[in-house]
Length: 135
Image (cartoon, rainbow, N blue to C red):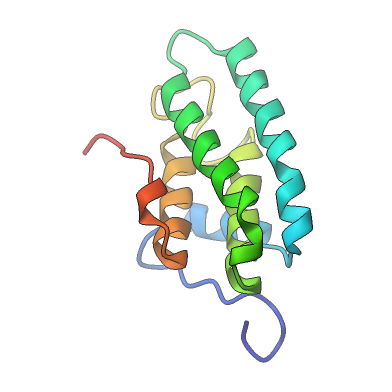
């Protein structure tokens, strides 16, 4: 964290401007114990996606994002405050229903969620959990 105690979030080169703004707002200081509790919220959101999926909903990408986020929140104690805030931001971004593209109504609906997650994974040194997106 920088001197002000807030997370240092450098994402200009990896995220689109609308994604940057939303993501930064969602990066909240989070203790490891709080992060671990988000696993249940991720599961509930994935269940909501599965129940409400339309014909173009990319359920597979949603499942991959949820799996990766669950692994991250379960290992929150391994990360410093900046990393935990970024992980929290990625979780909260995934939970958004009104993000850059409609998650349930667009075949690319979860691509922005995956970009945010992959950016965080790159920044915190966990690229093995990245979600592959078509080129």
